[in-house]
Amino acid sequence: MFDHTHQPYLLTRAYGFDGKVSPRFTMNVGSIMDPTHAKYVKDGAVSWVMSFALLRDDGKRVYPDLITMVDRGFYFNGSKY
Image 1: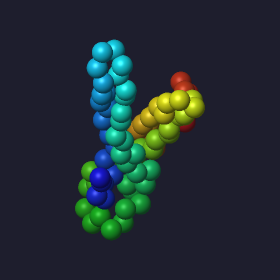
Image 2: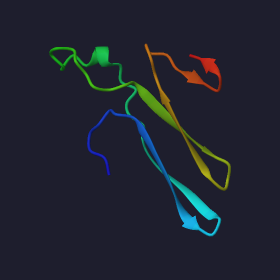
Image 3: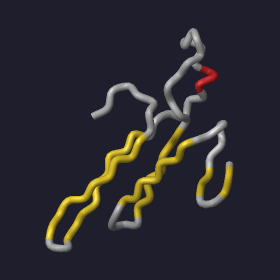
Image 4: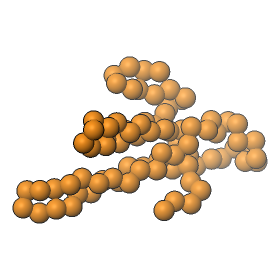
């Protein structure tokens, strides 16, 4: 369970035994909000990284893809945006 947070993270773990392992993940996608627009922060000091996430589903499994941004840009599938 998450409270209000802008911190992106992806936590993985697996459960099982005898060669039958099932992966699990917990993901906080963070926020795509541009910190320069947080006018309510008086000193301009924010503690988040712009980020977003995708979930890819092949019909059997779901694959998390957490994308963090630097200078309002990001890489996706080998291309910079």
